[in-house]
Image 1 (cartoon, rainbow, N blue to C red):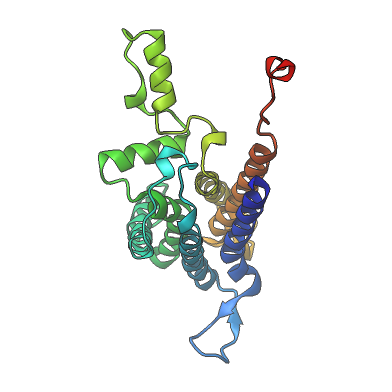
Image 2: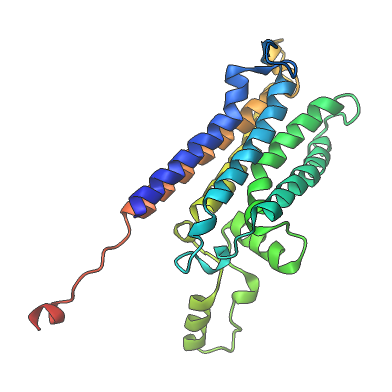
Length: 266
């Protein structure tokens, strides 16, 4: 059971990693022709990686459509259909690209001089950080979805689930049990682990990659946005490995039920 689920999740992480890193390693067709030569141009590989990751997320969502059951955490029991999930993914990629473009421009990148390069980086970051969450939980446009995103992305506790100071200890315990949101990584669904850890890894990786751009090494790979794209891909990979490690650890370290001594004597 849990071992097979962990192995299936590892396969999904491998598929996501190949979709993101494969275009840069293997190259992509330079034109829409069967005999077109491959290219390793950063803009071409970046846009292919963004779309390929979106498709992997949708395929994984469709394959897991029959596994949403009572064993899933309360926050993850709603499962959108493929049409709704596709609309969510496209919307998240579109609006997320605009949001990431503004965020990157706020760090000092010329919004007009490097328009195409910045837009491609923003599309990749939107695909890695926003599309998985939008497909699973919808866009954070209403209070319920925004709260769910906030709790998952920060692994924090929902503010509304906190009992009042005047509540008794029994009421506090009851509220803590009934809260629908996870408070620890072991309570996360595996897909949400990949989204959160991979998204944070991609964001931090892109930020760290930008540090080598102003150095006077005069290397071809220092050209914008190559270091940020490479950092985002590497950070996403590290986050994916961390997610797999967490899933396997939680699967094989779960406490096994024990028979009490009183039952044994009976």
